Amino acid sequence: MSVQVTSAHVEALDPTRGVLVGGVWRAGGSGSFDVVDPADLSVVAQVSDGDLGDATAAVDAAADAFVAWRRTSPRERSVVLHRAFELMIRDTDRLADLIVSENGKSVTDARGEVVYAAEFFRWFAEEAVRPHGDYGSSPAGGTRTIVTHRPVGVAALVTPWNFPAAMATRKIAPALAAGCTVVLKPAAETPLTALAVARLLTEAGVPDGVVNVVPTTDAAGVVGHWLADPRVRKISFTGSTRVGSILLGQAAERVVNASMELGGNAPFVVADDADVDAAVAGAMVAKFRGGGQACTAANRFYVHADVVDAFVERLGAEVERLSVGPARSGATVGPLISATAVETLGRVVDEAVRAGARVSHRAELPDAPGHFFAPTVLVDVPADAAILDHELFGPVAPIVTWHDDEELLRLVNASEMGLAAYVFSRDLQRAIRLGEAFDAGMVGVNRGLVSDPSAPFGGVKQSGLGREGAREGLEEYTETQYLSVDWPA
Ligand code: ADP
Image (cartoon, rainbow, N blue to C red; front, top):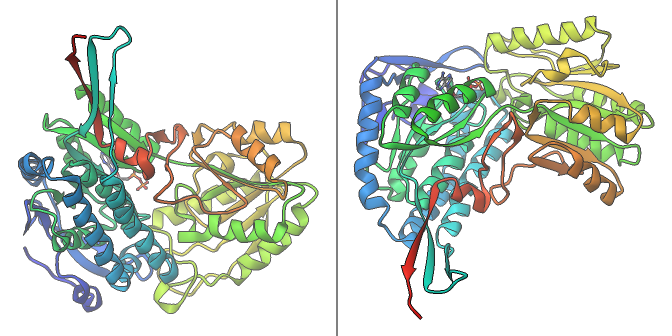
């Protein structure tokens, strides 16, 4: 493998830049590609570019390893996952540094992501050993039914760039706990963190071939190849609804078990009786964590007419205080992932302004070459403005004013997306009633963060199928089997 790295800083963190197949780090069949720091546009590393040969080799290794891995005891798998948790925590700073280098998020957000990512290993280490099954008799008697759950098989995992560690561990941990082996394709923008996590798994004692990683610039080729391989029995994807629906189509051809965590368009609702300071604090997390580049990010704000002025004034003051810039300089909001993301967001904001919205507050942009976008608050946004249908994936908060619950629910549920939603009200019963009426898989009640390894993460409508985390996250990697046993009286 030829490795030319222009950033000594990142190279010092982790020299592993290859394709990982069967425990061996090898050069990818298509040469290598650059990983670019979105904060200063420098090349931080060159990573092997996997081809279809690597894709096949990864499945060969995963299929071979599955034979023994599925037979390991739950306790053995649990011990390995516990070790993986401890190693990730041990390496928090190193992993956060990698995330900052390839994704650009703030150091606080990057550290928070590593801990969140590690927690999936701990949660599923604990879940792996919980008894799971059923034993009963048929209604007519004469038959005993034994229900068990077995690993679905080799799982293809496809992850995005916005949470380079957590999206990988949220899939790898339950897969391994269930007894599956995996082939992982990280996003080409952010492969370094996934490769580092894979290396830690080896250190934790994961046998060769159980976790294989193919970084590649040919996402469609490699993933399509996996979905056409009869040995691959599962696809778990996190990314856009557009790509998710392509993969569902491919999975349908071989009836492959599919979990899809797709786009969001989260409403952030502030009721007339909300604690406005708490709502602003929640909004800062829901909107600006990771620069707004999260599928759970608050995407459209619905603020009651009685409190909208106070909310906008206080949110605006917080937004103007945000420091935008390279994370290593201590900034709280880093760059967007690409120049295209900056252009698209700028266009969407301009369109909203043409439709009648007004920029009430804006943070300052740094004088730096990265893909920065100034955090922006938009007020007087018409309820039918196109910006409210667009997954912004950036630090822009469009605010719509509402007057009554019926109107609110119509606006909230008009979206084809249904991942996260947020509601703020001092009346908890009212907040829960509203939350239950939202078409969303997850609702933050008086808080701006819903992600938690012990809770089932996922969406309704076009936001996806299946859940990650919690007991449900493990079940995504198992299939139910029952044995019907003749049992004469
Ligand atoms: P985003 O807009 O967040 O980049 P994508 O859905 O484009 O979301 O990407 C999420 C993941 O899906 C990445 O790993 C990407 O490389 C991969 N991907 C993109 N296009 C395809 C495709 N046609 N087939 C399979 N994977 C794809």
